[in-house]
Amino acid sequence: MKEFDFYIVPTPIGNLGDITNRAIETLKMVDVIACEDMRVTQKLLNHFDIRTKCISYHKFNEKERLESFLEIIKSGKKMALVSDAGTPLFCDPGAILVEELRKNNVSVTALPGANALVTFLSQVPRDSEEFTFVGFLPKTKSQIHDVLKKSKKSDIIFYESPNRLMNTLEIISEYNPNARVAIGRELTKVFEEVIIDDITNVIKYFQKNILKGEIVGLVYKSCINEDGLDLDEKINELKAKNFKAKEIAVILSTLYNLNKNEVYERIVKV
Image 1 (cartoon, rainbow, N blue to C red):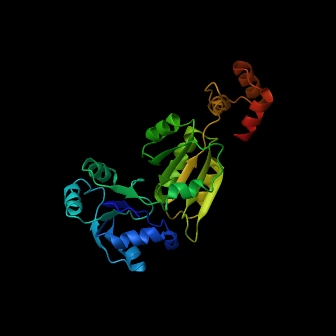
Image 2: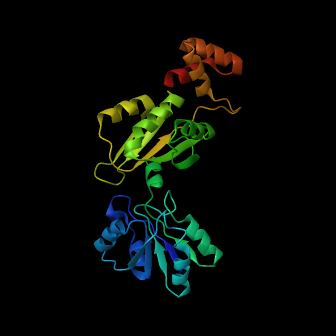
Image 3: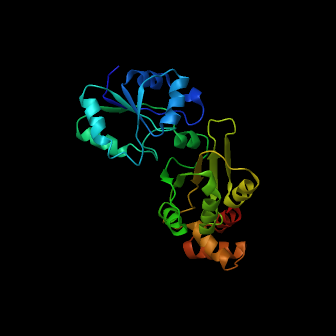
């Protein structure tokens, strides 16, 4: 097997049994492990009897660590990068470091492994392979609405914290009251849960159930025809003006040369 100077190593997102043999062997083989929270990583290392030295590396010190990491590698030692859970560089530090390493001709490789995004998508039905991953959504209503508008032609995947999820869902609902969403939490853990429903029902569900654990969410894309018409948006605009379903079907089918029955079915669905 080819050896590299720097290894990006995924760690389990919940179930320790998901770590790969190669990940364990790599973490034992390297001389130094760069990690977000040394307390979290040490629990993992202790579980697998890995005694490699750890150095903290997080968003608050990632720039100042660059020179020292380069010196470690140039001295002939090998390093690995891990995050607290999942694959580094997915909403975790590492991009600045990897860029710098490659500029200095350091050989870098990434191991396959646990990732919340992939784990979630592999159990959620979708109409197409296309999606937009936006990481953690911004905090303000206007910023979230901008994200939804910009990426409405594809499924939108996002990460969220339990204390922010309800507010985020309310903002999405305000933007599109008929949105269909999927929410996954505690993936790979004992209380894993994936809910797929209209956003109103999802909000009601989580109002009655305690929210814990890391969360991955999906907002299904709007219904857009080949000409770029956002049918759901037009339906919502007419509903807001108190038009009835049959009236909306007639209006939209006439204006945009659409099949009236298909439009009506969409109105009932959304």
